[in-house]
Amino acid sequence: MSEDAVREKVLAILAELAPEVDVHALRPDVRLRDQMDIDSMDFLNFLIGVDEQLGVDIPEADYPRLATLDAIYRYLQEKLAQKA
Amino acid sequence: MADLVMPVLGADMKAGELVAWLKRPGDRVQKGDVFAEVDTEKAVVEVESMFSGVIERLLLSPGDKVPVGAVMAVVRAEGPEAAAAAAPAVAPPAAAQRLAGPRPTIAPAAAAGRLRVSPVAQKLAEEKGIDLSTVAGTGPGGRVMLRDVEEAATRVVARPAAAAPAPADRALRMRQSIAAAMSRSHREIPHFHVESVIDMSRAIAWLTAENARRPVAERLLYGVLLIKAAALALRKVPEANAVWAGDHVEPKAAVHVGVAIALPGGGLVAPAIHDTDKLSLGELMAKLRDLVQRARAGRLRSSEVSDPTITVTSLGEQGAESVFGLIYPPQVALVGFGRLTERPWVVEGRPELRKVIHASLAADHRALDGYRGSVYLAEVERLLQEPESL
Image (cartoon, rainbow over all chains, first blue to last red; front, side, top):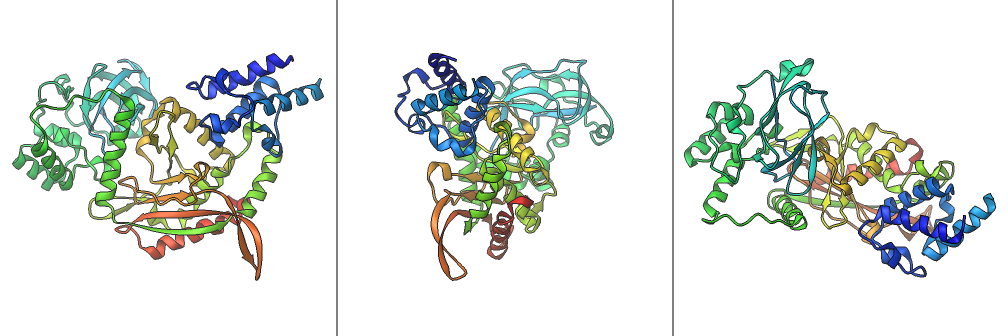
């Protein structure tokens, strides 16, 4: 899957979780929790969305690696490349 | 025949507005089926049928605002509920009052039959000329008590000649609803608070191992452990799982924990997870996920809004270390959890770094005492040291 396609999928999942947020205006290098009012339930729903739409089941131990959008894109590219 | 009435969907709810019918005359309903949507001050709520049977008549139109206890629809009831529902005289359609319109006329006997009024409350209402159909009952099963009529009398005297325009803004109405419930709580309930600091190291370690073997869709949030422990501890202190009914405490056999959920537009709701103590952690997590999603989408059901027997609030994610809450009446207790933090902790005479949480109980001193509150928190702590048994 292309980098752009991963990016669009991630933003679409976030948009579904927080329809009040313009996800395309989020800064990719700033912590998500500093830009969106999300709690642990939202984050879990985001991970479930990633699993359902990208086929990547992210273990809890990797959660600290997912603080920003850039970090999430990098992480998912890495996991998708491993699966390919 | 049985009446489906406007339910009490909040501590200070006086009336609800019909948004839509989801059943038509002739439709079959099972007990628990959603038959209508009602707009309260806080949200649109899906109202469930209390009976199984066939819808006979719908007495309201969308947009009608009627008081709590007013008949919304009539069901030809079947099954065991049918006998219990043994029919008071059915109010004619004219009794489907619009609160904004002319004052409804309800035959006193019929009104008393539906609304359940204590004799002393009825007497005072007659003396003061108060229409009981406009008074929300706070007694058992929505029974109108003396205090309800006294409060209504105060409102009548204080009401300005021209009614204030209804606030259109949902957020404002939510705020007003919370203000009414919390003002009542602060005014009527003699609160006391007790707090414990609980070592969560074992619980977190167990949860980490448990989640490592679960697929993401079945993973548990640590808040689920807190809710389950709060529910199970009620078996040791059942008087905290109760409602205050005017002059006595009414213990509840079932444990329906109301979970405080912040809403995106501001405000909060605390709908019930039914039989919380009997659910596995996986079941509880699934129900919590569903409840949070529906609460934020404005799709709560009437039983979830009206059934909580105790409330649990967790503000740790927002950074608060301790929570000292106000009880949601007529409940008698609220459990608060703060932020998970690391603290030096003395274990067998040596300091260690441990993950700890502040747990508090806000309790109604009319219903239980500090000693029992302390026993309750000790039980919560004990349960969280054995997470595998939750």
